[in-house]
Image (cartoon, rainbow, N blue to C red):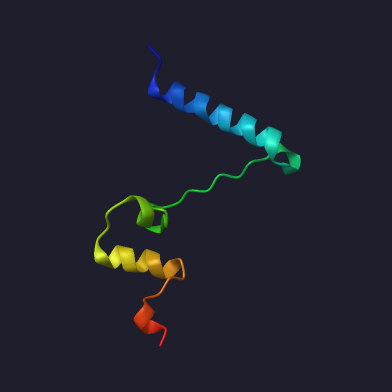
Length: 70
């Protein structure tokens, strides 16, 4: 049976192999950045959120309520 870590590493190798073939990488270096869970704007489209989190993410996308436009 394959461990979860091994499956994860295999998936990462596939992603990096794909990037190598499609993106011009300088010196073959890929920089990975950690994104804390509170800053993931995509959550606004995929999850039900508390109102304060929803408003924060909506504002970070530049979306405003119609009443604020007048």
